[in-house]
Length: 634
Ligand code: ADP
Ligand code: MG
Image 1: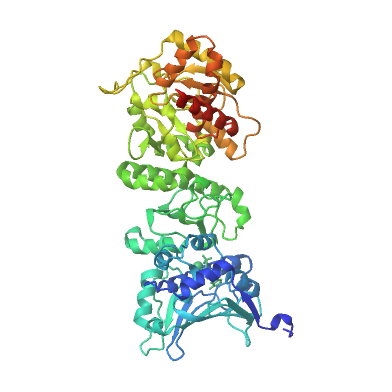
Image 2: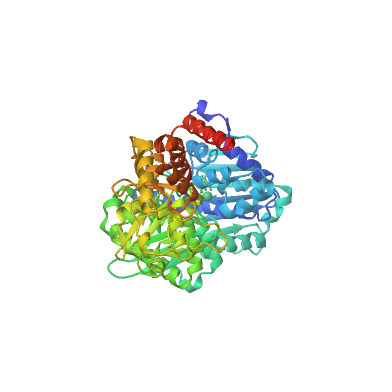
């Protein structure tokens, strides 16, 4: 290659997030810093996987060097530890793109999660794994030499982890793949000892399918691989320890521990092996708009893609792991996966199996399942409207918070606890769990011991549009239309000594509602007596034929609804002293003039109680001041 500008050493600054991360690594007091080796081996193994895939269509990329291997070389004299692979390698652009920026969303979010408090930040390292940069926990300088498969020129990346790094052409060339050389810190020389290294590899990297060899220069060195070297999912179920699952889960992008492991081999019309994990912690990109899958697709042990979006529905995107097919052609391109019939068959079968496994868990270990639902329920519920075919199974899995019980309640449990004359499954939805639980519309239901589902995931309003009922019982919002509360008597009368207002009689209610409607005009659709209320004087509900109050608000919040909101029905509580006093006024002369101000205030307070702003803040303030003044005059 000719001497050009490109051949000089270039200095590059790290991206701000990387600099922040490196600072944490360089000054780390993390006690399990040995995980740096797992991260580097994981990268080396990925690099071999990627070249193996690329070589299917371009075999010349492999050349003479077709046996993939990872070598760990300890040089006691130089104080360096080198992790070398003969995988895909990186050229100059790759080095800059991958080792100077945050390569994966998990790491970016990890940096966002950093609090600045050294102690709690450090504990995040082990949980999330921080990839390549963890090398700086043990090294004060890292030199990466790499040559990309199919390219001539090798490149040298070097950094002390402080602020910047250099990239330069490597003189004298280099073998294909990547060598990561760590200049170990004085207090990290233990990572040159063979027993220590062997222990680490066996603990963290035994599942790696590429052979890992150690070269420590010690006399009795055998050259045999330290790891088993077979893909974990191909091993018999009973041979795999929980620790090995934990490490493999980590290798395939999981955080923390797996909450559920699903490992089986399907034999029949098509053959494939499945090793999937339900994480215990939510991945950071769970609600990214792309909704990408992260399950790795292999064909006969050859890695095809890490984002097999067509393999599982998006509502299972929290799963991590591997599906290895025996039937797909090895040379299948990622684009061809989309319309492939084998993929479609696998997708159907694996999805069903995952759901049935979750159902089993829900029956056998309800507490454990509740944990899974707590973390991923909002994602699984997307399936309720996206996957009509599996609606029944998903409804069976669904768990809800309710107004009547602690913990998570299934729809079957709900139906079993329904009151004799109760005809619907009641729910209240909203954007905030706490506000939902405090909805005034709940009062009448609570008083009658009727359970109400409390829904606060944005997805709830959508599936409720798609699913009219469960086992013939319709879902009904308590903030819309009529109720059948009139049919069911309240469970408890107010306790003795408690002030009890005699409810306003029907005739007086007609007078009052008429005056209020006249005072409020088009601001409300109607005013009527309510049986939903116990403590509150008034609340707003939507008319039967209109959008539910909360659905309307949530659609507006997502900019999916233009125009003005439909006018609501103001329901008032005949048993409330304020309403009694207003009814009294409504009977006399000049009722409209006397009730005009209070009517607007009543409406505004009903808006506030349902989490809406008052319509006209200045008007509200003026009226409130007026009422306060006249109450002080008395
Ligand atoms: P991750 O492995 O999760 O992507 P890392 O920080 O471990 O994150 O690595 C960042 C990126 O650097 C990798 O995605 C890969 O593109 C590149 N990389 C790291 N090590 C190697 C290697 N040994 N061979 C080829 N590419 C590598
Ligand atoms: Mg990595």
